[in-house]
Length: 95
Image (cartoon, rainbow, N blue to C red):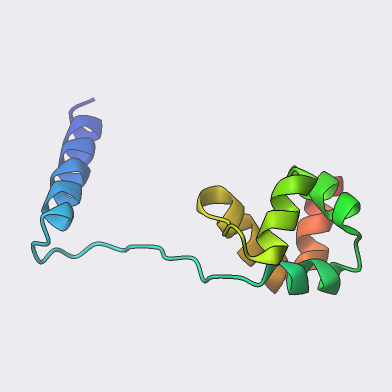
């Protein structure tokens, strides 16, 4: 239990230092921006099929494709995965 506490404490201290722009050795994952329409077109899926396959509302997908909004957080991570390995992601989701 002490090791868990120390690990969490260290992580929080590093996060605070990072937020205060102190020099710390942390990995920050920044997913690449994506072109949602081109990703969908590469999968050969319609908007309805793509939205259904990845748990996205069609309205949200259309906003992303038009550029009104940008995906962020887990959606951006998922879209980066689909961009890099669409067949693998679809296979995993359909299993």
